[in-house]
Length: 261
Image 1: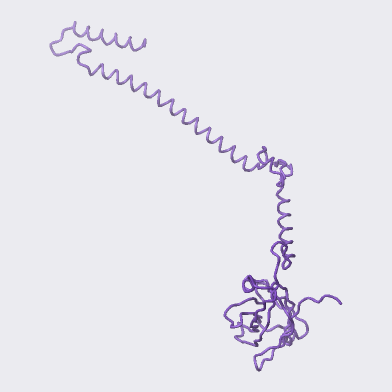
Image 2: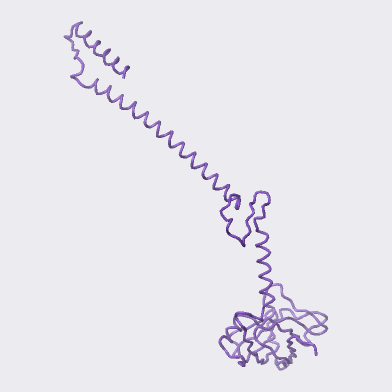
């Protein structure tokens, strides 16, 4: 006998807002749901939503559609979908529970667009304990993610192509080799050149400052000599030609001394 995937058949009774459910489900399952007789002229009622909630209805466990872009399929007069029971809310409900644990849930068929509650019913959900080391539920999704990561890592390999040194990510011994990350190395080289340029400018400025300091010190020396009343003879209205000659000789002597120093 062939294995039959988990199915849930829902037959709503609209005048009493009740439904009949046929099928057995468990947490973490992908359930093939068929809602009988709700399609008219190939069209599913606008905004049709199937929700699974706690027995009192305060806590939602799962729903369809759950994500943007999910739509019902049509099979004759029936609407079909795949209901995911691996939601965090439902997994939390069975956390640390035994394998024979069950939970009673409320199922609602409704439309927020049409503002209608079409039908409600009761559903018993079984526990399905997973081995955290070797999980079964969602293994296809886990493998898909592993494949995606593997592909991205392979695409990012440093394969010795132009501008890229050979450096496989599964071998870190070459992580410091030149050319491993050419873009980063180029930025670092530019930063080093900029730093060297700044150091050169600073050195030139320092040299200019030293020269300016020497000129200033010479100017101070000249000022001190000129302002010092005891260094040169004083001239007054009563000074003679000899006094003037003596002063000029002193000026010439100090100028020759500075020129030779």
